[in-house]
Amino acid sequence: MGSETEPPRRQVPTHPLARKPPAGGNAAAPRVRRPLPPGEQFFTPGATGLRAAFERRSAAPLVFLFQLPRWVVPLVMVALLIAGLVVPDWRGGLAVLPVLAFIGCLAYLSWPSLRPVGRVLRVAVMTFLVLLAATRFGLI
Image (cartoon, rainbow, N blue to C red; front, side, top):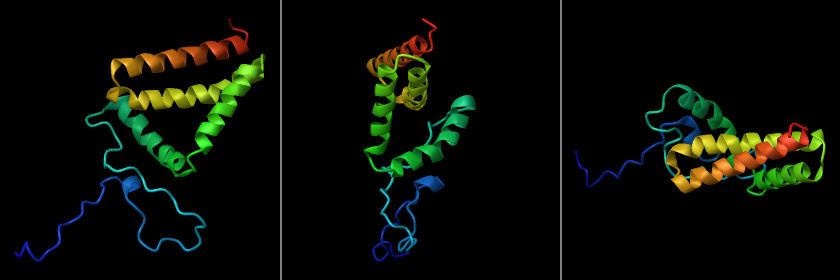
């Protein structure tokens, strides 16, 4: 088989969410979506049980968040955090809860690839957010 005449095959990502849409796409789509980052691993290799289930469940929402403009997620998180810091009652606690959930999910997903310093920082941020929410709800 003439390997010199055949172009090298391009590997197709194995996970459907990692695949790029076909060329031409949908003409009704008004904006161009960002391509996913390079690589084919959406999941932790060898993960079982709760981690595997959580990674499977969170893949589609993470792809959705990745497709949003880069400024949307940080802007929303900062606005909610500022609201949680400024509003001294239970409404401030409610504003902090989505930030706590988002940071907690990202910390859980990135935990296997983190160094000890990164783990300590994530635990510190989570502790701060839990204490902030607890003070706003009047638990502390």
